[in-house]
Image (cartoon, rainbow over all chains, first blue to last red; front, side):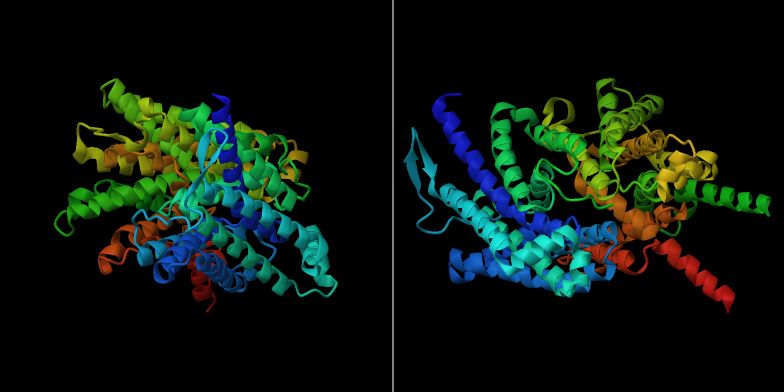
Length: 291
Length: 313
């Protein structure tokens, strides 16, 4: 590979990594707080993309979609947590199974409402061009994605470290039961956490749409599979783990696809299996393992 | 009593195997296809339940073995230009067993949600290989044109395999081996303290389940005359899992009635709905959510508690 190509692919990898962070941060947050691997995360991501599609079609504004989709998904998450997951509090595996059912319903409803064709959403005006960067043209939208991912990570870090909500989240990740005993309303905390996770998935759906497209099957690939890969590699349930996972998996996947076209998919999941075997908590995971 | 029970089971088995012949006057050929596919799902689900219900290993990657078996049968059948069942079904069983041995060695030491994610990830590797190794598997086009010299006998082959698989799973459940697996599910540490090699127990269950799933995959390949990477995909693993839980994990009848219900929802309910309403997966999801929330023991559990209530009256 020529140096220009390496640079180009490195940029691609990093912008893919930024997308992965937006996608995986919600899954990681929910796992950290509730010990639930939300297998409907990919379906939430897909729903976010389709809501964005409708918003853009009716208002023409991508930016409005970027507000509306997370909001819609947040409301859905805020309703689903007390309606379903709360009934099985403490039974983590059954909660995970519930999310499988939720995912089946959401994906089919999307197919029914929006149809089952491949759709596309173009980048908003102003970001749909490209710029010349070291020996090649590069889409502006990918640079925007990268900046957005970094900004989101920074914002989340500030919230985690400097605010009361962040303190509650950190305490909840440590020991949610204890937090409840100390008088915090864990019901509301869990519902808010799940809603935030869903909203982040919806946000990822909007931002990824111009890059990955909007089509049936996107709930599994890239939605669920890649967000699982990121949090498993980086470490379940911590912000730094989600960052590390995305920064590693984004470029690894991009270069994997360039270097070993035929086995790229297998390579990435082989990495996951290896990490899970050698360090089941992920590279930066500190959290106990839910059984 | 025991004799009577066996006579009833035998009669039911014979009735099942000969279904297309005695049912012809009343139902269409579609019924035979439907029952055949439900029986294949039942074999697949029975094998998964050996892990989920019996040994307490919640695998979300069981389709890997189903898909591997389907490809094994399809590829050996085409390359060797044979439809000799001992060859193709044997290849499917062997490949299913070997793959389960490889994946099993990697996963049997983890538990719960981690077991679930590991099996999912490793099955995804199998899916990726099936999807991308075009020269061997046909890639995204899949393998088509699998022929079986006697298509009319396909149903009979499936039904006999189902009866045998159910017998094997039933026998395993009653054997000391099956009891040991239940022990591993209930309390692994105690089993280890009692001197059982629990990792080996779990691994052997994984291999047996993989073998049977491989055979189910081969039967599916012959029945639909098509193998696709989706056979090894996450959606198929989820389908088997839903079947087991809805029917009732840890019981012999559960995966069987579960596959009947899932087949009804997937194949019969859509024909009752308006054609532009394709929501069978959503219905399946709602049914699944209902059982996880309110009837974790599945249809068999519901039946049992209803029976007990009647008796107590």
